[in-house]
Length: 246
Image (cartoon, rainbow, N blue to C red; front, side, top):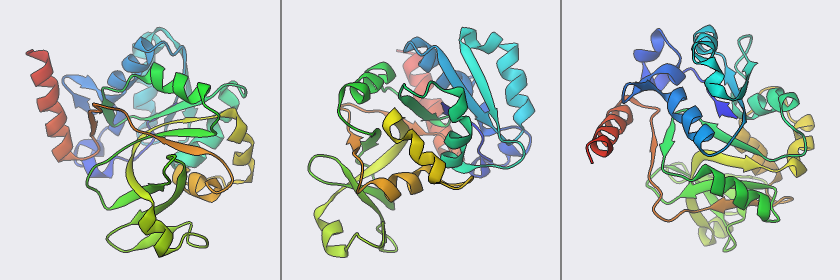
């Protein structure tokens, strides 16, 4: 599933007239980069959710012959459902017995998506979250086995889940940043029935992380750019130009 419904407020003024998914990097829309990467990795069925300038995305997909794959659109035009609600709405479009790889449209990386998916399928876990060490304000917190135990904002000191995670425990856990790429196991899909219509997927992970096995996955040599802001958009352009010249 590709999250393409966001408002893209950090990319204004570009997103005043187009959805974030169609903002171009290296002469191609972000959606093109992600769908092409998924297709090259062997994924044959993809769901793209839409909200902001949704018809532009639908028209783009149709103009590109659905990228030669089984590509469905989950329409959130009526209300933006956030990342968790977006998954919940799209679940009927998926095989209930297969894991779902989820990819933010504004993430460009060198991740081997097929290998990540296979790793999630082969391990006895309920979700795999691609994570890395980088400077940020908000971190996921993991134990030594890289099982998710909580979340913190190091600037404000806020901790989640606030009812069980103590400052002492948080200090002993490993801080890693979420990448926007993750794999959900069929084992936890029924839990979405108990979630509201609109919610963030991190709320889901933090609600159930003490009951289920949500594992953080680090990859050696990870190169990832979050193209959600104008400054990182310029960085991504420079990176693509550099790789094109080598």
